[in-house]
Image (cartoon, rainbow, N blue to C red):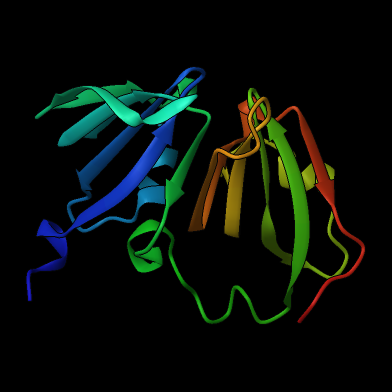
Length: 174
């Protein structure tokens, strides 16, 4: 088995009009920490397959090395590999519940669940501080103009600055 520092996370990164299917060497960090790192405004991609959002199966180009501006990416889909994408803390989720959410970002509708306290505060959740991305678990992103195009994963990290509407269901589960 390879060392944590050399493992690669496979993900799909979405910007306004394109999807980048990629692998990233996180060098012992988790993706959410890399995205939150304010010392750099770019995310380095080791392998990038570029496609248009409305034709996701048609690869326009592929590159061995590229970067994407973190403030311009809308969301990141992680199909599998949650442990490489988000820190898991036993104490952090003790008093949290799973809430169903519906989120709109440019061109997409995202559904899934967030983990938040029983007295969830949307203003606090949306505050852009250290956490610049909202983690949505067991999530699906559906192209608004063609709902047959969907992207699903264990996790979707949504850029808070790209969120247009954030709705939370009234039925939480523990």
